[in-house]
Structure formats: structure tokens, C-alpha cells
Image: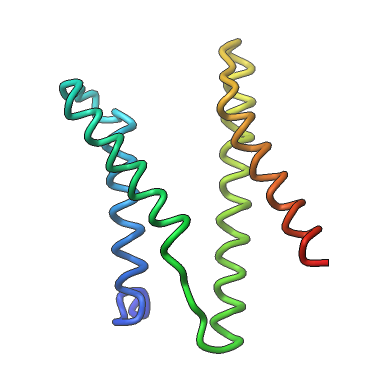
Length: 121
């Protein structure tokens, strides 16, 4: 836990904390519904920050060990996302309330993994 807040990891922790906090604001888990303008501003912030975190912000490993850690964390992130989306799809199917967005997100994850494997060979 000590290494999590080391000087090298501070930007990683801050970006993750901001992403989680902004997603919690949009999920309405606290049963607090702000005005329409505030929800639009939160949604725009979440979209902009998500695009930054996914497309622009890059982690650069300095040696083979850090590269292996980065690959392991990316794999764990993919697997946990796929598991959560699969569980959500099953729950929605059992409730007879299925949205196409979850299936599209899981499909995009699987297709991008297959495309990545194809391009690396």
C-alpha cells in the first residue's frame, strides 16, 4: 500500500480517483437528482475526462518489470469489465429488461481484443 502513493504513482491514483468520483456523480446512487443543467455539465465533464484518460493519457514503462505490471493490470481491467458486463447482461435478461448498450459494450471489448491479437501476429 505504501508504493501506491509513491511519487511515481500519484498521477495514476489521481486520475483513477477523479474518474471514479465523476462516475459516482452520474450514477445517482445517492438518490440525489441535481438540476438538468448540472447533470449536463457532469455528463460533459465525465465524457471529456474519460476521453482524456482512455485516449490521451499514456503510461510509459521504464523497464521490463514495469511493462509486465502494466500488461497484467490491463488484462485484469479487461477481465473485470467483461465479468461485470456479463453479470449485468444476465441480471437484465432475468428481469426482462435488456438494454442494447451493455451488449454493445461487451461486444466492442471482445472485438477489440480479437483485433489486437490479429494485428500483433
